[in-house]
Image 1 (cartoon, protein in one colour):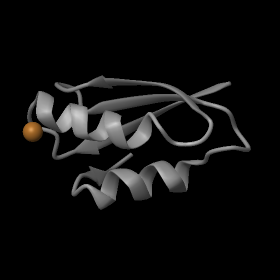
Image 2 (image 1 turned 90 degrees about the horizontal axis):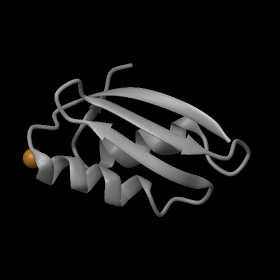
Image 3 (image 1 turned 90 degrees about the vertical axis):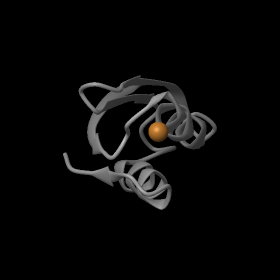
Length: 69
Ligand SMILES: [Cu+2]
């Protein structure tokens, strides 16, 4: 398992947090998703080889949020 922390812009409330969590949590290889709203940090614990950064970014951006780091 590996941890990846992304900086995401555009999340403004717990509804946004839940949107992002619901997108990422069911993805293949994802074990857990932690989101810190105030810092805009999304930490994903996942199995490398089953999931990758590009997929996480695409999912987050498809919901209208920006991955900035
Ligand atoms: Cu919101």
